Image (spheres, rainbow, N blue to C red):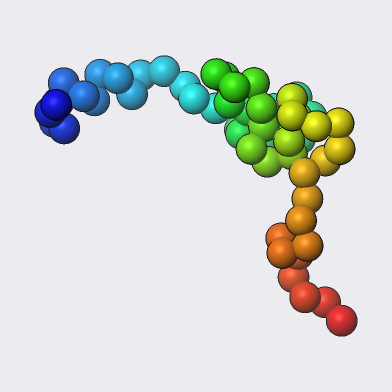
Length: 56
């Protein structure tokens, strides 16, 4: 198992492409799920309270 030039040839394919729901480059081509909005996994938009700034 080398970590030099031979293993760099395995990095030529794209793992994530542009999502058609949110537009971010987070749609995984293997699992067909978006890491940003959750497209392909759930019908609801992926969002959490810890993502927001604390605005009083």
